[in-house]
Length: 199
Image (tube, rainbow, N blue to C red; front, side, top):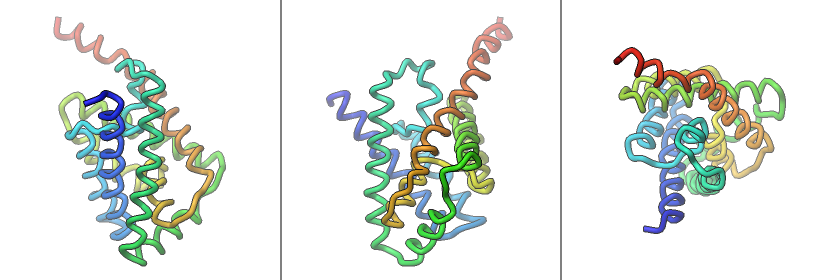
């Protein structure tokens, strides 16, 4: 399969998996929704799909081409929105909940900080998965949802369900990216330390 086609297919797959978790969140709410949402990222990691928030913190470590990361983001966003539109035809309660959630979003510093903190948690979750444990995902995903942190791909699905658009999605993308990079800077020497311990 062509590398670009595979990249796009896996990015669509990631958007779909996250959308399933987000649909459960919109449908069930707290406390069960955030717990079930974790299935989305578990699926992304174990099935090797391309999720922007799971890849951006490893941009330098994995030597991901910036154009590929942008393609993953764009595909996640477009696919996520379209899937959200499909979900909007399934349940009026979900549409109502999505509309109410979007109404709380704004382009502000607190929203940006919540996006950064979500990026931090996403990096930790994927980092721990790469170290052989799903606990970062199982605990991290409910954590960021309960705390009200903002995840750009989940948010674009919500926008699709609500059949609307909000400029906060751009703030969310930037915040998620920055939060992941912050954690990369903090943790990038961990493998080297572990190697020293083994010696």
